[in-house]
Length: 85
Image (cartoon, rainbow, N blue to C red; front, side, top):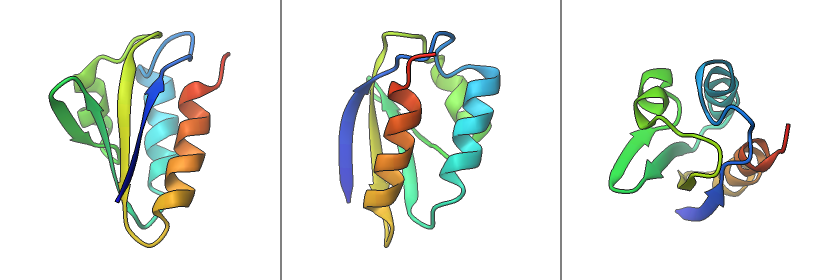
């Protein structure tokens, strides 16, 4: 299991369209992937879970991956979250 803390730099945060793209990317990996904001942890492959976190720009979140391709998942998803648009 690997994890990292990230600051969301997407202009609209991880809302609607960006959340859908994030879930789509997360589902490309076999590893289990989670997003944690404060004390709430959700499955990053679930659009409803991500939307429930209401992640705005500037929010610090924890990205957690566990599985065979956990490092690749963490790298790819981190890049999406930290990308400035």
